[in-house]
Image 1: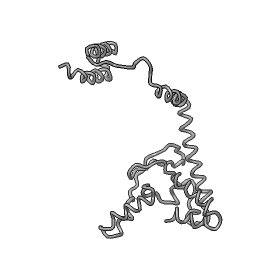
Image 2: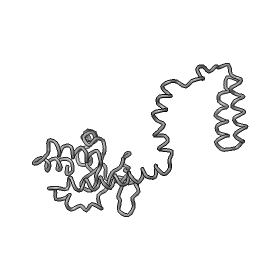
Image 3: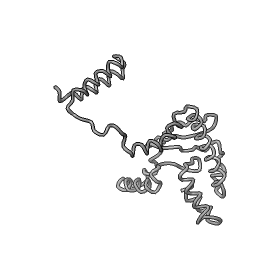
Image 4: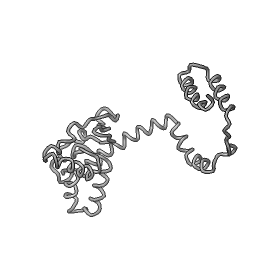
Length: 204
């Protein structure tokens, strides 16, 4: 039975989690299990130097995140940043493209993150929280070619779109795509080429 003693720890953890026995009693049982083992623990006097270094580096961040007031402010900052992303998108890229000019700012959806066909989106119209949205037409462009070509087309399209699926502009904006477009417009696309860059990114 002694060889299976370590399995008792899982039972004790279960009992402690569900508060079926006092914590002091559970702790006593754990100590008794450890005292009856032939295993020895070495180098327990001092923590490894790497742990000390990393712990020191992480201490300010841990303290910061343990403050509930600060965490609440971070949530507000995130919503503010998402709203500014929407405004930046409207200002920087709604030039020279008819369909962009017809889209009011309040109708633009900010894509915060994606998992499969489920998106976390920010609307900002009376409700400043991030909500879930399902992309029901994510595979419409795979229905046109013949079946043998669909798999290859889906793979190439997903790779080209950075595996972000069916994020269509101008009614949606995603920060990495917007930053990439801004870099092109301010760089090689500055001036006469900015209109073409906008069409490439947000029309096709």
